[in-house]
Length: 212
Image (cartoon, rainbow, N blue to C red):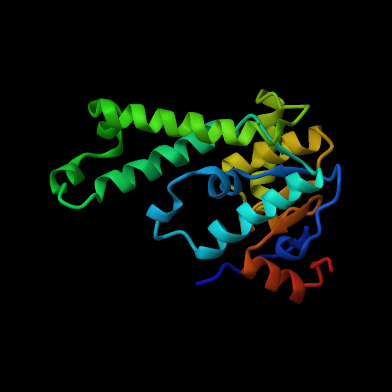
């Protein structure tokens, strides 16, 4: 069942967007994963448009002289995503049924060579991110004030915990363009969401929020 988003952001169909020089974006972790992670073909549960469209568009942005950015939470979220994906791939290797009894915690601690491979993959992916993007200039300090604001915005908008601090960092840095496939972000009014998510684009069009 598709989510019924109440679209408050400006939404741009990223697949039709012509990148501009010096155009600044905060790139969400999911897009970095699909752009740089090397084993996407081993993940049959990922929709084809995500692994086809986002890497192509990110390459166009870089070529045009756009300025993609990451924030302080990107590395931790990306490392977690890579480790979980590597675990799922490993646990479903053919002829290795005994391995499927291991959980992700055992995978991390009990299998030395696999752990080394995961760390190497994380390092390679992160080099791919930092070779084309830079950190936002005003990272949020996750102190009492930031936590209180996150709590308020959690009640105001249907977001997950990572998104709350991602948005605070973007605002602190003066960046309102966000590239993401995460439909939750379309519910935030003070940003422009660049996305290939067809459900978000369709609902934005119906609600008069799609920017031509």
